[in-house]
Length: 163
Image (tube, rainbow, N blue to C red; front, side, top):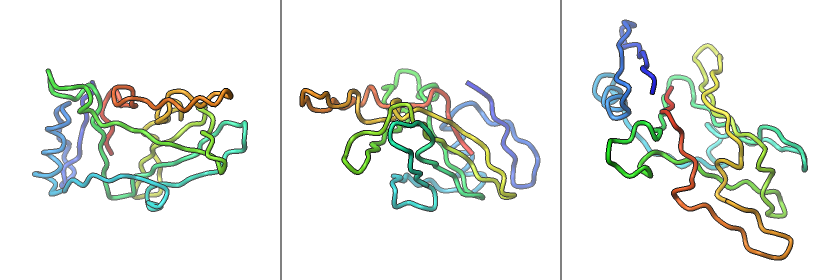
């Protein structure tokens, strides 16, 4: 777990606790922020950008960008309260398929970035589609159905991500 330095509104550094709940309380109570849970999809174009990847190739297929002046946070498994169910950590799961409804390569990557107010971009994370896919096992040629991941198998970040 890492300690994070957060700048106050006046610019003086504040040492934030390495605790997700304390971070959220700080944003809400000190900076006046408000929480909003959102579900991202291809229609949320302010934050989500999709890219075509040639069949059989690997590459970035989705970019999730936090707009300048805004923050997003993801509670990792290291921030869940002691004794709480591990599934309380935020999960990330998607399904990406081609026009024939076949899953894309599990080796394609998704990138999460933070857009700065001066057009700078900071990489938050890059993960393989196979890690975040809803599918545990693609359908086999014998006609077997796809096997979906259970909630225990959904992708969860180890440490919290925020910007």
